[in-house]
Amino acid sequence: MENNNRKISTWMPVILAITLILGIWLGIKLQNRKLAALLPAQLNNKNKLDMVINLVEGNYVDTVNSKKMIEDAIPEVLKQLDPHTVYIPAKDMQGVSEEMSGNFGGIGVQFSIQNDTVMVIDVVSGGPSQKLGIRAGDRIVRVEDSSLVGKNIKNELVFKKLRGPKGTKVKVGIWRKGLPDLLSFNITRGDIPINSVDVSYMIDSKTGYLKVGRFAEKTYDEFMGAMVKLEKGGAGQFIIDLRGNPGGYLSAVVRMVNEMLDKGELIVYTAGRTQPKREFTAEGRGKFFGKRVVILVDEYSASASEIFAGAIQDNDRGTIIGRRTFGKGLVQEQIPFYDGSAIRLTVARYYTPSGRCIQRPYLKGTDDYYADITRRYVHGEFEQKDSIHLADTVKYFTRLKRVVYGDGGIMPDIFVPADTTGNSTYLFKLMQKGLVYQYAFDYADKHREELSHLKSGAEFASLLHKRSILNEFLQYAVKNGVANDETGIKTSGKIIETQLMAYIARNIIGEEGFYSIISNIDNTLLEAVKTINNKEKLVSVN
Image (cartoon, rainbow, N blue to C red; front, side, top):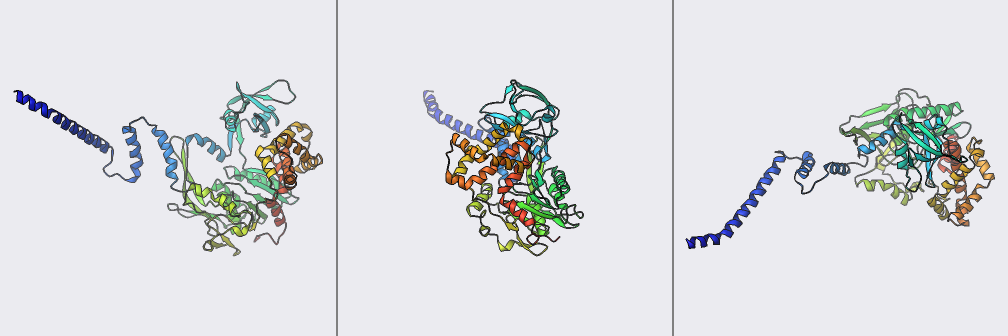
């Protein structure tokens, strides 16, 4: 009996070890079977992502936020496609929708944050604030029971406080110069337009100018309203400025170009792997068919702007002036999700009437794609047309058999380099500190009543030049830490004075005052005026 007990005690550790190993092995096998049960019989790449999320949720050692994981993963997946296929989170959809619909719910003021204070630059004509008597120069210092003054005031916070659904109310406290107490207004929010046409005015007795900032739902109506206004003012020829316009709705640009072409002329066509070729042609002789037209573009003119310029150029209906455009030839379709988010998925490419796809290469990734603008600058493309190199294999022909190129934007008919002759270290220091803008606002605010009788940019320029506004500003700059620099002032003086006058005019009479003054140092626009008045230089079959 004793021997038996001794044998059992000798083998007991071995038995326990074997039992433990068998238990671990069995546990692993059972766990693997459990995990395997989650997997379909035939796992494929399309459901791998779902399976990874399910496995993490069910088995990961710590608690995870799977919703955040998915939100972070989607943009990374889409990066494998093209730079214009993007995910729009639900929290950003309202802002995106407002921009493209052309309006939002708000109180109807244009503001600027100066000296830690929200200052009203302008009020929307007919908007809620104007109806209650709020005016340019007022300071919004309170919203409801909260102060709106201090170093932490940012544009995003002001938008959050003042915007809201149409019909809702917001109480604001206004400080107005000359009054001892705050003014209190209970404002009912209304629909506030986001204008697509930034400005329109007569440059001379026969030339109308208008600047289109985006292509949204209401852009066509705004465009036609501006064109008709200019025509009634005597315009028989038009300069349409698309510089800096990032694009927008295809339908808007098609309707606008339609007004420039003859019946049946091709505007643009689209095609994709799953999208059949779709042509957009002019429906009839447009209202402005036969009018002289010049289109201004630059390296930030993209998408719908390039469709506009390409249609005019390929049909030989006008002259394109400026610098090579951005090069976006992809068409996106916005697909909503149940949670309010959406994806903008590239579904087709668009082609100009000559057959050009002007999309530039993007296979090296998004960062490299957007860095192309910097490379253009470094290579001298903004200053020398000869620095632009496009392959002969992407050569196309307009109706008049002029050579045009694809594969990287719209090349203008007349190249105008970026003007750097007035740049200086002194000007850079002023811009870095924002002194030109700040001084212009303070000057307009101080002299608002006496300047309010001026009606045009020319009147502002004449008066302010007589008052030696530049010399006054130079003293202001010294007081704010930028010492006088005779060489810099000589080089940049005209730019500084023109900007001062333009910003002051904007603060009193709005965008027309600004653009009519700043045009005096806008070489591209000055070239456009010369070209449109010179029939021999103007490209047109009309």
